[in-house]
Amino acid sequence: MRAHLVSFGAAAALFAATSLQASAATYSFDYVGTDGLTAIGTLDVVAGQAISGAGTITASFLDGGGTEILTLVTLSTPGVHDLGGGDLSYRFGGGTDLIGDTAYPIDAYGPVFFVSGPGDNGFNFWFNGGGQYQGLVAGDNNYNGEFGAASFALVPTPLPSTWTMLIAGFVGLGFFAFRGTKKGCAAIAAA
Image 1 (cartoon, one colour):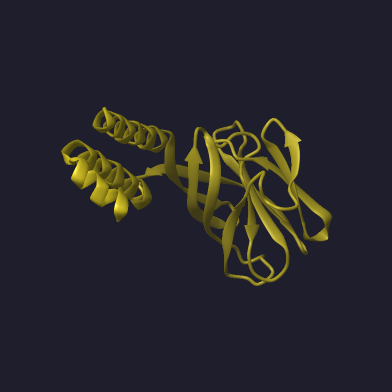
Image 2: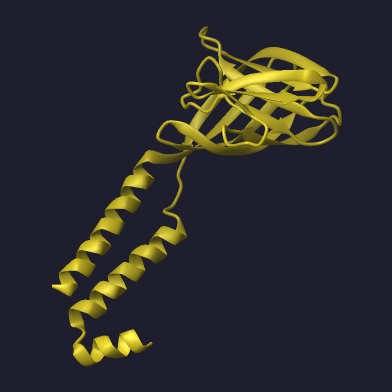
């Protein structure tokens, strides 16, 4: 009986891991604006919501010039304003609020990112409904909006090692419970 329960637990863990993996994906993005702004990166998406994202942005008009790091703003980011319905607002330097969301595919609000480097800047890009995307860099001494093209691609992601280890552990427990005798089980419990 115990062997069947442990085997059932291993099967349940395997099912949960594959279900989570099926609803989770990583998407790469490549945004190219009309005045030289480029942004590339990834969005980790679970059940249609981006839970994290990172990349780089390159634009000559940024405070520091050159290339800066992007980090996704989510509803759990300290200081974010939850506008309801999954929409968020985050205030960058100069009192500029960027409004967005974490929905994927990218919609009319789109993701909001911190821009690292000198100053306090943000970057937001969204689908404008006309077959293109629009981007905006806003914050300290910046307010630059432009149209651009963006492409998105699914990036293959392997099963996380923690899930692999968890499944291996359950399989091992199932093996010992199935093959163990009272003496073997006592030895395992004592260890």
